[in-house]
Image 1 (tube, rainbow, N blue to C red):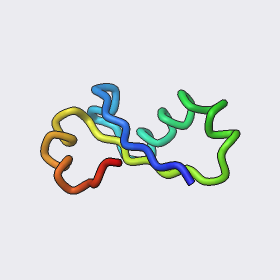
Image 2 (cartoon, helix red, strand yellow):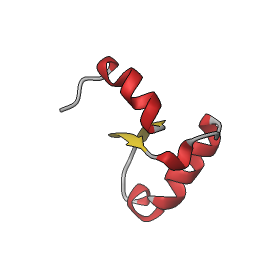
Image 3 (cartoon, rainbow, N blue to C red):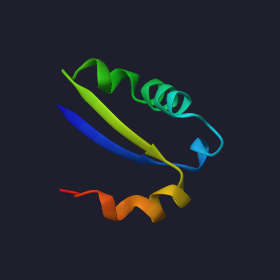
Image 4 (tube, helix red, strand yellow):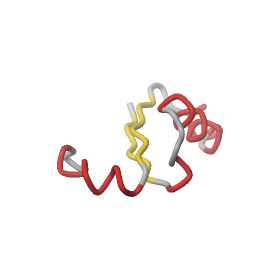
Length: 57
């Protein structure tokens, strides 16, 4: 199981589904080799507001 937090200005104005599709397209080859994949996609502004909600290992 892989989980990723992806922060990019590319996500600005995009829906969650559009963000996930963009990340999946960019990581297509890597995702194909893993069993399970979970992602959280944020703009830089969203991440600054919400980063305290996550425990990063």
